[in-house]
Amino acid sequence: MNLILYLSDLILPFAVFYIVAAGLLAGRPVYDDFVNGAKEGFKTVLGVMPTLIGLMAGVAVLRASGFLTFLAAFLARFISEQLVMPELISVILVKLFSSSAATGLALDIFREYGTDSRLGMAVSLMLSCTETIFYTMSVYYMSVKVKKTRYTLPGALAATAAGVVMSLVLAARM
Amino acid sequence: MLNLLWGAMIVIGVIWGSLHGTLGAVTEGVLGGARDAVSLCVTMLGILSFWSGILEIGERAGLLEKFSRALRPLIRFLFPGIPKGHPAEQAISTNVIANMLGLGWAATPAGLKAMEQLDTLNEKKGVATNAMCTFLILNMSSLQLIPINMIAYRSQYGSVAPAAIVMPALLATTVSTIVGILAAKAFERTWP
Image 1 (cartoon, each protein chain N blue to C red):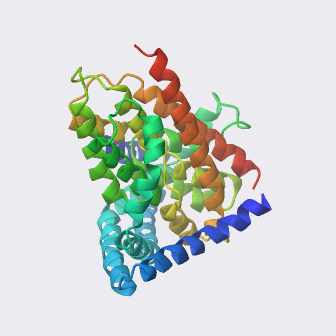
Image 2: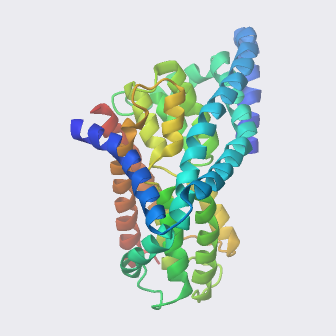
Image 3: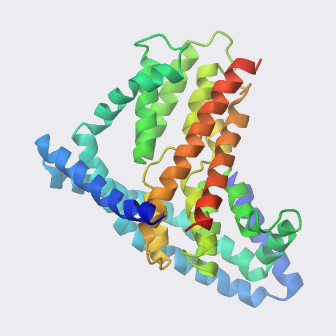
């Protein structure tokens, strides 16, 4: 696990180094390119801000009313707490439909339990290795008017399940 | 989808709060949640702007094309039904690379183009082909190599090591992608 943490620290600086070096070697005006890209990133964040405000306020309402605690306790009756922490189940289910709503729930977990707790780690990994299956499928298939999606959903759910299991296993070891 | 989800969140929260006498806390929750969202966006403005700047350098330096060329052999293995040199190949590899780098804006257009190209090879319109299923499973198995958003969230919420998830997330993503590919290959033979 130590090696994994060590490599984690290396990847980001290395990626930045590699990309900037590639830009320099290609004779690009790297700083101009950087600023252009950063402007886009800036706009993207400003664009998602209203969404985040809405969702975080929404999750806060659910949390403050006591409903989230009830939901977790309710889910815990069906699933062994040793296996999956009940808080994670709602995140997984929501993530299948909406990435930003799942982020709202994840941030709530960060605030309640901390980012580096086992729960915080598990949810960080889980959201990093899963996609919004139902949303993606409907956008892509609608674009070519496909109605019969055959084995797309079972295949995607298998991949998601594998990601969730891996996240739980890895979070337990960190 | 989100309309329903968000609407339900607010309605359930307020009804639940009034039944359990927690409406005061709900008010505080709304204000706190909205404030938290803004301070989170301030952190994200820094991290995500920096990262998109770096990615722009990479794209201008031709890394996107370079990587998608390197990916071709794998695409040939995954999609045996696509004739060699068909435009679908190019669109799929651009989509996959853009997803790996977390370039959402480059991934979706290329992905939709790939679907369109795959549909030209479709003999039964309205029914997904094997290639379409495999492509979407691959796409939805999550390909992003560096989860930069999650690193930003973690840093905002006081993580001592926001980037500690990079390697484990890469491992988890790799496993989910492999499982997705295996599932696609297995279904390809057996599904009617």
